[in-house]
Amino acid sequence: MKRIRIVLVDDHPIVLDGLEQLFNTEPDLEVVGRATTSEGALGAIDAFRPDIVVLDLAMPGHDGLWVVEQMNARGIETRVVLLTAHLDEMRLLEAVRLGVAGVVLKEMAPRLLVECVRKVHAGEKWLEKQSVARAIDRVAKRESDLGSYRRS
Figure 1: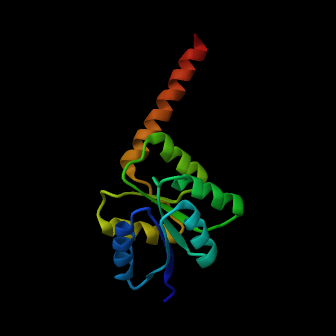
Figure 2 (figure 1 turned 90 degrees about the vertical axis):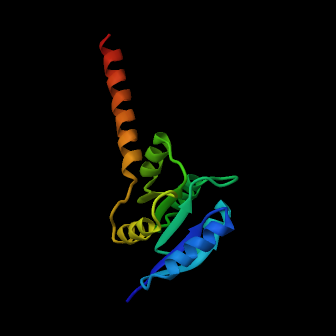
Figure 3 (figure 1 turned 135 degrees about the vertical axis):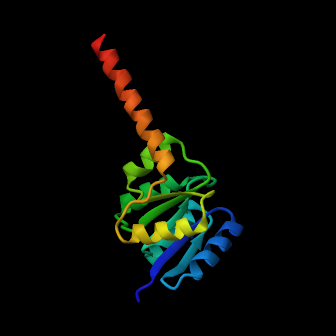
């Protein structure tokens, strides 16, 4: 069985340890690298060429979306799962625009992160439903407001 190779990126070592333990209990998942900074993330992704990067959104210095932008600019095809404590609608839309395949909130059950990684590896999208619904509502309202402004 081919294992899904994962790089973990979070600025909190205790979170990295917990994520690594979570993934290492799964026979089809393998943590091949870890990083605590955005620059370190790019280095680990370059070095290990993982299938998936589980990437914290909020980090000191450059954030997770900067990492995704850099990956896109370099043509790196590693699929991205954002792991975040909070995601506002505009950042969610930006993440989707940049090609992020999965978004998981840190408050969710760990089994959902494992399921997300598997689905994203299989080519599917996994986006946190409430955040997506709010983002769509916000965009629809903005479009509606623009439409009524144009008609005036």
